[in-house]
Image (cartoon, rainbow, N blue to C red; front, side):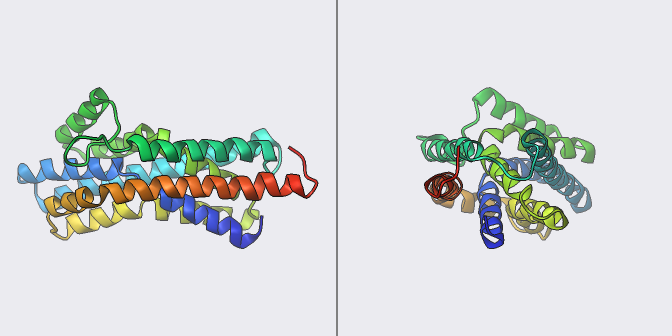
Length: 241
């Protein structure tokens, strides 16, 4: 895998991760409830900044753990073709799942795939959050709750990062986290600058099907590309599974 190819795969994986909406949904619930209670702007910023910090930290920890585990289990920096085949198959499967049920059909708004009991619990916790520490923990949980979908790009990114030179692996990690959390950071900035949460939510509702289609398609494309480049090409050129 060339340097340019590695960075292209890493950036695409991060962009796919960024398209998932659970953290943004929870941020809008948290912010909307705080505003209805006429929370001071400074306190609101503490809550949403702490939430963002929790999300960014959990994404960082998740990718770091997967990269460390991959390096430890593989005993080197290069994943064999069978590992790439499994990961690419998983990515394609998740892409189809995103197409099928990331947003609940026959419902208005941006109702996500989560079981209603879990969704109600997360919404309830977001509405009851009053302290920065609680908001930080909520950010951590929002990433874990969406592992079903974000694990695929995280796994691919981890396998790419361990193949990079040691001197740039940290840069790769930072680039992934920055891109993956960019929509959330943008939402924090917009809310902090006084933009209407209803306007942000309206934009999400109007574009939810496009985001769903784009995320699913990108995952499938990424999975196919990885399979062709890391499984088929080495096999056809005399490599091994």
